[in-house]
Length: 157
Image (tube, rainbow, N blue to C red):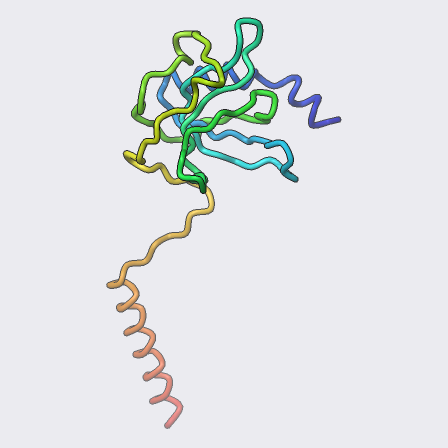
C-alpha cells in the first residue's frame, strides 16, 4: 500500500508525457503489463492520446527500447499501468504528427500506427557496456605479452 500511496501523490503520467512530447524528449516509463510478474522500463516517444470523449485511457507511443519482438514498435500503453515517467535524457525527431499536443482523442482502432524503421536509434544510458576497439585490444595484448616476458626473464636470474 505504500507504493500505491506514493503513486496517488505523484504527478499524472499523462501530464508528464505531454510535457516530454512538447519538448520532443524520449520518455522512460515504468510499465506494469497485465499478466507480467513485475514492471519493466521502456524508452518511448509519446504521440497520441487514446480513449473516448468520457475518458482518456491510454497513450500511443513509438517504443525504442526494448525493441519489440514482433517488429512493430508502435505500442499503446494503458495509463493506469504506467507507474512512473521520467525524461530519458535524449531528444527525438517526430516520426509523424501526434495528438498529445493538440488534445484530440484517437480510438484504439485508429492507433495501429505505420511500421517505421528506426531513423536514429536511441540507446538506453543505463547498463551499457563500453566498447573496445580492435586497436586497443591489440595494444593491450602486446603489453600483456611484454610484461609476462619481463617477469619470465627476471625469474630466470
